Length: 486
Ligand SMILES: [Zn+2]
View 1 (cartoon, rainbow, N blue to C red):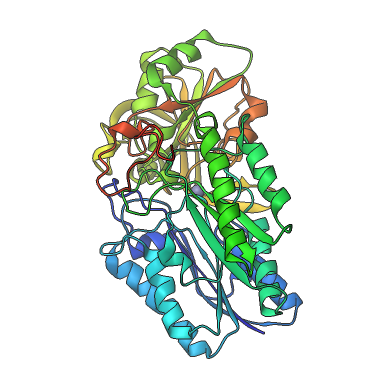
View 2: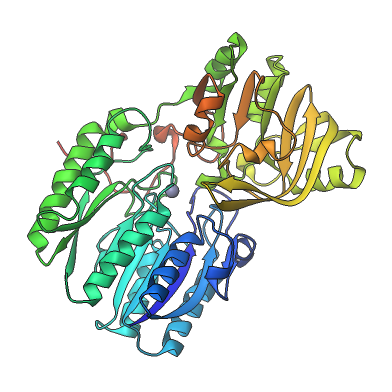
């Protein structure tokens, strides 16, 4: 067998002002050689698993570009076209292949392309014809409709949010592709539109863990090969937005359609209970002032880079200082300029420093602070799962009004407490841990804190959907409309 593999993704916040250029991919995750030779990470892992499985089976693997950018505003047209055409040219140069496996995020929007994945795979299908099987792994915060379904043989989404299962879902996709190539199965797919938007963590108490368990339990039975709930990505104004249920069945489109609708309606029935609850900044500060035996974790959700926000707002830090909270940690605050200044003056220096609020209108005001440089580290990382690394760039830890603030040069969310602990910050004993993140930190920080609040700060990823100026998303859409499925 000959297998062609590639990776191309980002998650586009169409409301964010700063575009995602080629440089954002090159500085993000970029591999043009052997993806098997780089450290494991959420962006490398799917292709690494396919490479391992295919090699074990004695298949020939042709690798193309592997590129991923941290979410931000729409991708620059020439950047998308350059990467797309590069992969298509590699595929043409490879000659006939039996299968293509690609990890695409599924929510990339570029100038002139509201659905980059559908455009990309449509061109690929035209190039390879029907004889080559095409399989995709997608993040569950994707947008999908028939355009992508029509040109793809197999699609498997992550099932877990926080995303801890990208490697296992890559294994699932590989296994289904192997069986398809062997003639054991003939996958057919169906999609059910749940007409719902929001954030639906799968590890939080409530209906989602059971829903995910039910999907697993139904796979491999009664003709069902795979089930995926695409949660959708709410900070994008595109006509194919919203949560959709995907079912893959063996040969029988009616089984796929029935399973997609059955599970889609089950999710729809629990959508409100499954939604992540948010707290206002004022309420969060009041709760933080109460104190307790362990720190309170405040997630600065609207400025999370994982949703395309800049990661440099100062609203939460300012509120902590104004509330007189001094025993706290806050970060990561993305500010390459301030990190550079700290690097130039060195550990121990005390200086007046302007931090945050620089990059785009959603960044809001910057803050002028009296800072003491506590720690500096070039080109560092945080841990992810057991053996992966997420780069965080250069780091400067400064003390501001008693609060330890972690400044860094690479836009990233928080995957692990090692984001802080690797840089001399002790989390135990703090009154507040303030994070620029939405949800992915929740389970791993749970043992360290007395509680966690998801705070509706101002920013590019606000959770009050009614406030977002959507023009293109399909309506009716819950919760903008009360009961779209009736
Ligand atoms: Zn996601």
